[in-house]
Image 1 (cartoon, helix red, strand yellow):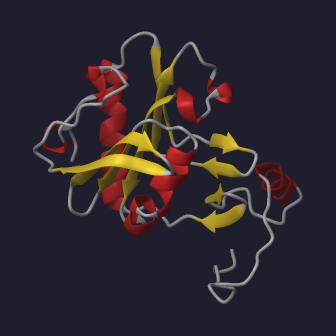
Image 2 (cartoon, helix red, strand yellow; image 1 turned 135 degrees about the horizontal axis):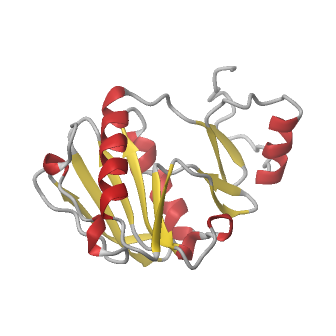
Image 3 (cartoon, one colour; image 1 turned 90 degrees about the horizontal axis):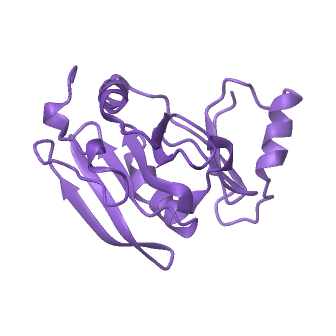
Length: 191
């Protein structure tokens, strides 16, 4: 993979649709194993996942797998097609099983979760605006290094009106997903 460049800052860029990027992967211009997202037509390479990120992700996956109520699904590291120009790969999304995974759009997401290690600035900066602009009602960004969860709620314009920080000892309770998805980082196994 070629390293991303910042040399074009401030200059016009060509925008790509999600379908364009899928086609680039199909013809080999982009490697199948490259981790990337498409944000409003910009191709954004994703940071490699660190050990802290993986520990939290695995612990949440195990916990939610045990407590998930009927009628609700959660998908780890799944593609989320928010529009023709925006594709994200959140660490988790929670949604009603009444909606087929292939049909899930922003307003269908009861909760999106990003676990951030090396990508914290991006996950707390630009990403909440993208999620909010596409109607995702609640976003949790877990800072894997500091073990803090940033809870974004109350859609307002192109962002969230309410952002709070909870410590690893605090129980994080979703506003739209079932309470069974609530947890405190300190109480998750294998962390």
